Amino acid sequence: MKALDVPETVLARMAEHARATYPEECCGLLIARPEEATEAEARTVIDALPLPNEFDGERRRRFLVRPEQLRAVEQRLDRRIGAVAGFYHSHPDHAARPSQLDEENAWPWYSYVVIGLTATRVRAVRGFELDPRTEEFREVPLRAVTAHPRRPTMT
Image 1 (cartoon, rainbow, N blue to C red):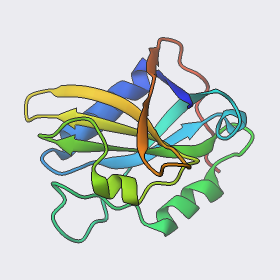
Image 2: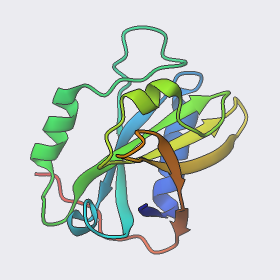
Image 3: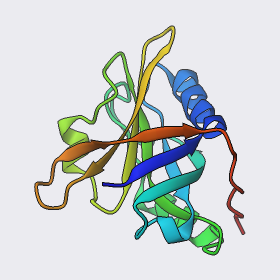
């Protein structure tokens, strides 16, 4: 289980993204230090990269990050500074926990952040990972940190 350490400024930007796209789901990528993206016990998120929700249908309950979007970001990241370590998305008017569809489409090497919000406020922000044995999400500690680590360099 990897705890998530996320700077308060990054959490605030993710929450603002969720509020800006409400009542549709927002989505984006979590960028972490490369050495923590796979092997450390905790993962320090150094940035969150908002992406457009590419789902072709009802975006109030679904989001889509296209594979080419993910590949393009991975190619532009300076791997010495940052690596894609997961995804974030919002659940408008629902709890901050993954849906069955989220679980069915998750990968166990990534971290996931879910933002539950209403029209007037963000209710909760929680972290999750997919257990590779059970193929079910489990909650991980999400810790807001005050220090802002160096952001990744996109080339």
